[in-house]
Length: 429
Ligand code: HEC
Image 1 (spheres, rainbow, N blue to C red):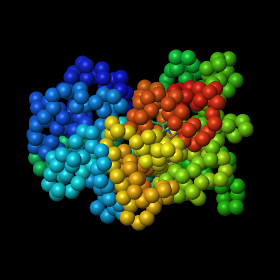
Image 2 (image 1 turned 180 degrees about the vertical axis):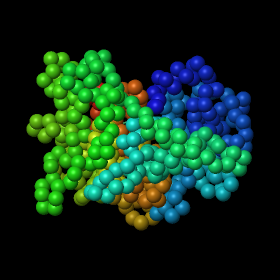
Image 3 (image 1 turned 90 degrees about the vertical axis):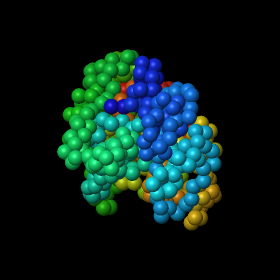
């Protein structure tokens, strides 16, 4: 219920461009790039045939990084404007694709990895500070409030159902889709060095994951009464490898140490860091920089056994969209579009100027708030090993690259052993 770049390339070799994964609408960098024989008129092609000649080149982002084209308008009440600064695939400037064909409203094309469509039972609700509600973390940018609305949106968008000729999706079909996807669970089951993840006192693997989906696993740990101190660490999402702390196997012990670093339960506060300048965290829950080096991976990846985010406001800018370059974030990529953002109400949180560039505005396109540029959903973390590359834009090729990113971004000072432990733990989820 997920995809890896290896599998995408195998499928392309086996089926060529005829597999639905490679549909010009979203499998190509832009529909106008595919060879004419691969297109048929449709509203999302601007009624045109592709003009390209190379099937693989037209889909380079999907084949290289597992990225699917997402195309959306900007919230009409946005407090910022967007200019297209760099458009390597012409989809943000070709009038057939850069505007809605019926309304003329500008449409922006971005490229994102599909999120995992299993373990969704963890994602459908949250309970934060006693208030039940929707988790809002189904999509990378939180644009779909429910799995039902997601199923409808994707059928008309990615799957190109035509409302005029095909009508609405029957409610029973929507329900069937949601019932199906909330019954799916996925997790790493075995580790080639660590063995069965449910053996020798470990409680990893997919069966345990399914068993752990109980009403109480979906909610945050209860908050202390007013005046009572907060437990520290506040969240301990994973206990799968507690039983491996004293294992005979060096690899199993490494996984257990990685889990402790992640949870913030390691000795001497190893794995903890000062969380600074994270839009969607520091401005939502506290000052610009938490002075205490006490945050952990689990601060954001807090969902019990899943590692998704159960807090409200769960899109956060950790610096993966190129708009935090030079301050610990990734550099702007030139193999992706670059957008120039101009904020109308002054300099947003944690930025040095009201004008800046990004590869992907993230939540801001939906919310219309300049403060939200670059905010991206905190994804859940099971079954990571089988679905490289990582991050919404596939910019981390391996789990070790993810760890390297965080070590720099949050100045964690991890030793090479600690990096290996954290990597081994993530690979066992
Ligand atoms: C401030 C919140 C925050 C903290 C702290 C945090 N993460 Fe994340 N994590 C995110 C967000 C947001 C993303 C998605 C970023 C993107 O895709 O561009 C993410 C993505 C990931 C991914 C990639 C998952 C995938 O499917 O692509 C992994 C793995 C991960 N984090 C592990 C960690 C580890 C390990 C730590 C601690 C060293 C950590 N995270 C700390 C917010 C956070």
